[in-house]
Length: 372
Image 1 (tube, helix red, strand yellow):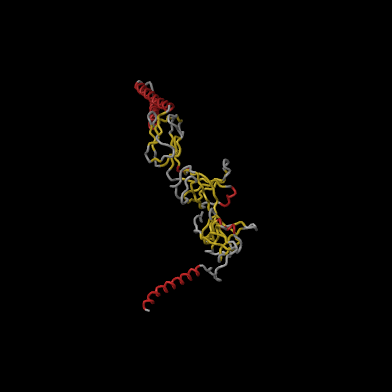
Image 2 (image 1 turned 90 degrees about the vertical axis):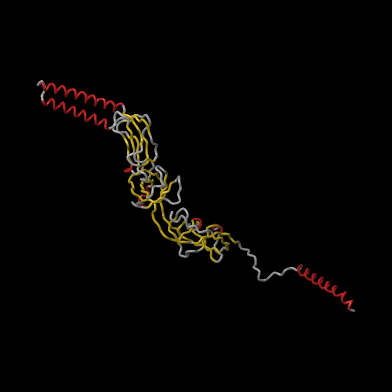
């Protein structure tokens, strides 16, 4: 008997294992019951939107105008010579920075100036000979003392005239140097050119002494005043921060060429501005600290006004709003129901209706451009 039990014990274990395996396979094939607590599918549409937090910030109302950078008139120095000359060599170019004492150009006397010098030399020679003859005649009692005095006066006048011409450089090569540091604003002559007495040769302006001339529509004249702040940027070379300036002169005359009113602005810093550069100026009319939203949040309303959407508990809420000041990026919104940190829809808002379900993606708050 002991031998028989030893033989059947493994067979029973194998049978039990087979039965268990069959039960497991049967259970795996059975359908999984659906829980009564599983969420039901939604038949209503869900809009995908992006939002930002409503925030307060400063916004400025501006008038945009365009103009040019010019040197200050009282800082513009015109270099000329008081006698006719011929330009021998020009040492500088327009727009070049020069230091005090730098050679600007060389010139020689023109034919008219040389003739003046020769006439002065001849006059001195003739007056000296006449004076010598009068002295001899005085010894012979053939001339009066008055004649001698008149002759000596003629000699003195001839000497003064000749000295004046030679001191001015007539008759020799003349070097014209910069009396102070600055920028060559204009070169009015060419090499080899003969210029008349007093004609301008070139103009030199003190470095960083600029003024900005802006052309303003005449209808905005009453909104301007002296010392009004202006934000200046170069059209050709955009910079991260505009140059600040103040209105210095408001003219009372419409420019016949542009039909605009010229306004002159004195910039606080000139390092980023170039002479004759094309400039955009934003004249600040007013400024407020208020609730702001990106421009794309504002929608035109059927009633002729404006609206925007906020999100509350996963649903879109429509607000009829009034808009105030605006710039290139942001708009002032006026509505008693709005408050700071409300979620305002900026993308996907054209699809929304009041109470519509939404799926929200928070956009990065962009507060740049608030003061533009």
